[in-house]
Image (cartoon, rainbow, N blue to C red; front, side, top):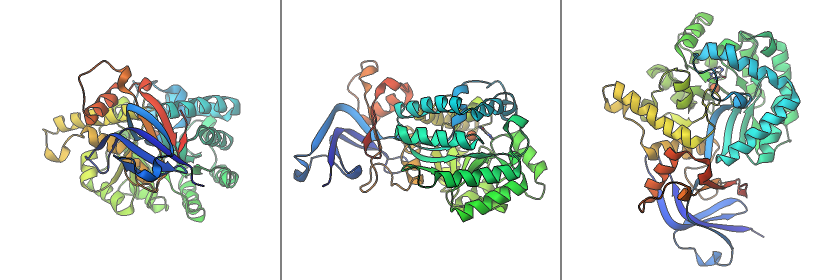
Length: 423
Ligand code: GUN
Ligand code: FE
């Protein structure tokens, strides 16, 4: 017996970059949690199925966050008077070291999982800390909360304080043990290999991770070309490599489905290497502004055909909200456009484009189609703008824009993940 659920509301989604599909007072049908179709008129065969009517609310795909750091959740909004490397050394590494304590990890990770759902994010690619036990606690918390995604135990064996550093042997052995402990334990959470970034990982560690990626057929996530001082440091650590990305490539970590966070300073050659390998860019504009790393050349990336999706990069980003990330992506792109002398190849992101990057783009990382595609698991949220100031009658696209810029958690009225109603 198929369980059929029908949701009624004003359905808005981004079928492709720059396009918006809007159906007022339309129907979204799910069978056993899988999308069966979007309809302006409900087909007769569904007339008797259970219907939930969200009235005038918008029904949109839930958000994907392609890069964030779970153990930085409790230090959101701290240390931003420092640039990246000083921020890591002064605040971040000390905070992450606290996740050796399983009780502390449980408290923070449960709060994080709850808040992600409340903010309408149902699919994530997440960094844990280097702690194996803490990473399992994080995965347990996400699975229980109803979130889907990839979580990585971080690997780091150099250039951090004693309290947050493994030996190469420990790092590889703990990773292997973690992978074996994950196997069969989760329905919706999967492991991803996570070398923190080049300065944190010796060649031997990178080489071992490359072998694990192959042996376990795992995806990879890391950081790339975020900040000038970082890039200069990487150059001195790897004089044999002309560009930052080549180090990941050298060790078998640069492949289809690899996610690289930031890529603020990736030039045309580094971007070409991403495109030809099928490496994804996790664009984190809030973080790039907070840590004054720069503004990523997103328009160029999109024009060149790279796979780009939005990310909060908490706690480089100061908010979990992907509504906020979308607005920040637009703002950052406008500044880049202005300071380029308004060059067409630096054109700013529009609202429909930022919405695409926060939903449809990331969905494709998880193997789904853009928007609401038949056959995909249903991930959706209901946005209620009645909490915002009274307005003249607005078109669905105008309402979406206002909701993005308002970034108000009161407007998120329902959350559906893998077809399950969470809020
Ligand atoms: N590069 C290496 N580690 C980090 C981190 O935790 N945050 C950011 N933004 N960049 C990094
Ligand atoms: Fe990051």
